[in-house]
Length: 65
Ligand SMILES: [Cu+2]
Image 1 (cartoon, rainbow, N blue to C red):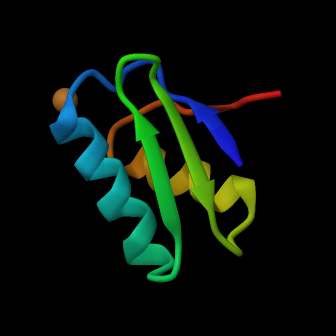
Image 2: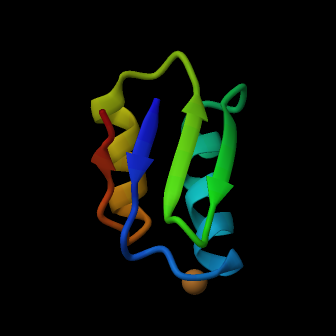
């Protein structure tokens, strides 16, 4: 699953998002591209759960595609 996260601006943001998702699903893997503000997540969680976790960390993701 891929999300646009327009308010992600640095490595600190990327780490906060990684922590938020892996605290919910320790098996999740994330590919975070800060310059283009895209987060790719491989997880068994539903998109809605991933969005909630990322929002709880203070960001505003929207699904891509
Ligand atoms: Cu940041």
